[in-house]
Every structure is written in structure tokens, then in C-alpha cells.
Length: 603
Image (cartoon, rainbow, N blue to C red; front, side, top):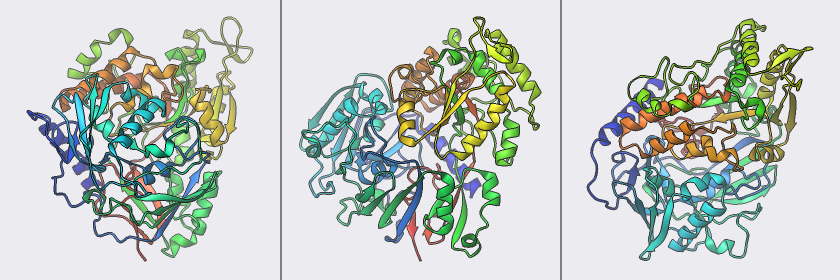
């Protein structure tokens, strides 16, 4: 199965490369749109490749979630909304095929049109599209949604909206969006904006946290909820999109429920008892040792490993470079050297999974080992004055030692700290003025594995005369502090995809240094990063795009913002045996769009 999905990844990327060598002379309405070339599926496709069009409908699935929620509006900065509201109840003009990077197919729209230079995009609404209350989805709803989310919504929507010159109706069912910036991804981004019912929000502040149930056009409606405890979604029997080829084999469960637990350990116990139907196991050692309970032995629970071809991303402790302690790259490198990866991986994960070596490791966009060469080196040369050591020469995260002492790493960390102006005085790391080097590590309650990693790391830092404080808080407080960048270190899982685009600004753009609520937790502030993101979005071909992302990967990795741990080349899912999924797996594997979207219930 793994060989099949990897072959599929290479085939899709190769097709995109070939298709990108020719261009359409004029714009015309299409059933889908791709970043380069043409969508893989024809206009008369029966279903998405990774969906089973004959899947039965009915049944129930229960998830166990960590943390809590206090809002039902997932499109704003304030509050903490359940993940399911966005994916189950609200739709977009277009939807993703998770078997193709950078390709969308019509959902609320019946056609999409864009010129080769992507200076504008036009959507034509389906006449049958309806909200869950039975009222039609109108052009007015679309325009209001785009403008409101773009100006009052979460900062993640702002970057792309700033590139919109105008949005206007075209006839009764058309919407045209004209762009002010050269950016090939913008038509796709606009295809994924949420469409909400304008009338529901008249006289209300959209950007204030609320528990009002949103009216969407999606396949599910919110049936019941209790903040912080559970939320239940019921399939809408009058869902307008039941017969769409895009939806065949999707949205099969009659009921989807999310129960909230304060700790992942408690959620696992609920799964073992049968109160939760599926559990994602991130730890390879636990996967091998902790799944011999009665429901597994009886066959009531099955174990599945879902392979994928997506980039590794980086997961680990992120340093906040807005603080003077972490502004110097040598200090950040010292923090990385002090982290004994080999020892921690062996102790907590049996050394079973590989370490992430860059943001795009495990993909064609990875920077690779050794010096930059060819087109990648040419691209980086324009930013030579802004590159840190390792961007051109190559950078590798230190492995550490199997033993706890990590003497070589500690020696190198001491040397780097001294170069940066910090020395050990009376057993404490201090600067020339005698001020101690210290910071706060902020963690979310229930993150037991993260806490165990931090505990081991604290022992290593103590050898450097560094003694941070550790603060553990609930999910609401954690969200508030992260949005305000109020931490020294915290745990970050920076996920990237096979279709990197404007979200890179949200993750790493310099606007996020001061603008609250972005995902630039590390405070990256580099002309090279900003410039490479611009170049990536304007790349005229797949080849140039790939080289630019590889260059960006080098700049980000050598920035030394994150102390990474391991990543899994498979998702480890234990699930109730009555839950089924298609044999044909998507390129992305276990990713949004897979579970529960194309799963079904079968006795």
C-alpha cells in the first residue's frame, strides 16, 4: 500500500510538471482549477478518487478531543471554536481533491473561470445551492462573506484579502474577483473562502466570540453542544449537495460527535472502554506496546497504518525571537545543541520514527543535504546579505547522544552562548551586566508527552546554568497567550502541505512579528523569507516553483526557530471495527478530507 501511494505522488507531481509547460490562450468556464496545467479529473467524473461512491450512509462516529471550546465561530480571532464547525457545516465555492496538490473542483459553484495570468477569477453559483434553513445561497451572501471574513475575520484571511482589488456581481449567479498583485494561487484561495448567510449576522458583531449556531450550506447541522464537553453534528436530510459527484462517497455518517477530555490519557482510556470510536496514536512505542487491551484482542478494535506522501513539517519546541534572549541565531543554535534528540527519541518513542530534518522533508520540496546547487543557489544569491550560516552551505540538526549527558552538545552550546555574550557565573548563565538568561516555557494542559520531553530538556539546560520556568494552562488561556505571542518557548507543530502558498506568509511572514493571531509564533522577520514567498507565488512554472520552495526551506531551517523531534511516515489509527474506509488511499493519507469524510459505518 505504501509503494502505491508513493507512486501516486510522483505521478501527480509529474503530471503537473508536464501540464505546466503549456498555457490556455483564453479564460473559459471550467469544472475545476489547478495551480499549473489542468485538473486530473474530467468534467464528468463520478466521485473523488479516494472516495467510495457506493459507501452506505448511516451510523455514528465519536471522537475524543483534547482541550475545550467556548465559541462556535471558527472564522475569527476571539474564542476557541470546535474544529468540526468549519468542516461539517460551512461550505466553500470549491473543494479539494486530496489526491492532487494545488487542484480544486467546483462545489457551491457550477463553474470557475480565470485567465492564464490569474489576474481575476469568476465563480458561477449553482442555482440549487441552499443553506441549512432552506434559503438559497446568493451572490450577495458570497460577496458579504468574502468582505466580512477578509476584514473582520481571523488574521489568516487577511493576507490574501489585501490582494483583492475588487469583488462584484456578474449577472444573477456570478461573482468576479479582481486581484491587485501577481499571485497564481489567489483564485484557488478565493475558492476556499467560507460562505455564510448574510441575514444571520445583520445587526451583530461578526468579530465577537459567540455561541450562536452558524447557518451554513454544508452536509451537517449542529444538533447539540455543551461548551467544553461535547458537540454533536447531525446529517441534514435536506442537504442540497447530496447528488453532486464531488460529494459521492463523502459525509456518510448520520451523526458525528466530539467529546472533550482534559488529557489525552483520559481520552485513550475512554477509547479503550468503547466510549470513543477512533484514536490517533502519535507515539510509535505506545503503538507497539499499549494496544493489547481486550477490545483489540476480540477484534472489536482494529489497528490501521495509513501511509502518506506529504512533507514532514517540523514539530517541537519553538523559540520566540521577539524576545531578546532568542534574537541571536547563536543562542538558538545553542538551545538546539543542548537538546539531546537521540536520548529523548530512544526514551519516549523507541527511536522508531525519523527526525524531521527540514520543513519540507519527505517531499520533492525538501532542501536536501549539502550545499545549495543549480537554480536553488541562484535564487538564494539574491538574498546573500540576509542568510544565516547553513542556508547555502547546508544545515543539519545535531543528533545528540544515546547517553543522557550529551557532552559534545553541551560543550558546543557553551561555546555558542559565550560567542553571543553569555557565560556561566556562579552556576548561572548571565550576560556581561550580570542578568541571568531565563525564559518561560508555556504548555497546554493534557500534553503529557510534551511535558515529558520538556522535563528531560530542563535537565540539559541546567547543565548550562539555565533554569526556565514552565507554565501549564488550559486551552482557552493557552490560545489567548499564543495569539499575543506571550511565551519564550512553546510546543509547535508546523504542518506544511504539497501545495505551499499564501499560508506561508501567515506562518513565517514579517507582518506576524507584531500582528496578533498569526501563525508566525517564532517571530521570523527576514527579507529573504518574505522575498522567497513572493517569488514562490509568482513562479511561472512547476520547476521554478519547486526550486523556490527548496530555497525557502533552506532559509527557514537555517533560521533555527524550532527544536524538532520526529515525524511519522504513517498515521497510526486504532478504530472501531464497524468503521470502514476506502482501499484507495489519497496522496495526503490521513489528512483533512479523509476521516470522517470518506469513512462509513457498517455492521
